[in-house]
Length: 103
Image (tube, rainbow, N blue to C red; front, top):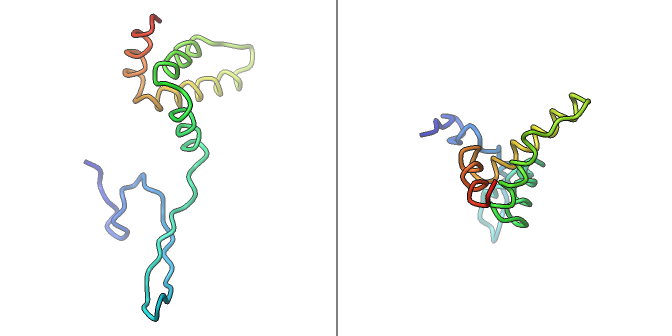
């Protein structure tokens, strides 16, 4: 169970929303506009929309042992592998899916 922020009644991970007051047909109405999604959220959505969970898990499995001479590149590869695992439900789910496809 996640705690809600008492002032905004939001879960801590939910993005802030902008609320505007507008007159519509003579009545004051509150219009809520959420903030733009983070690039990381868009990436995960794109993965889910274009690849099967098994393909995502397989890519993450192949990236796990990847290593280069450049530590910055290695960190980026780990970051991407973590996003792939997150997209399928975490590392445990990724391992199960990868095993199902023979990895």
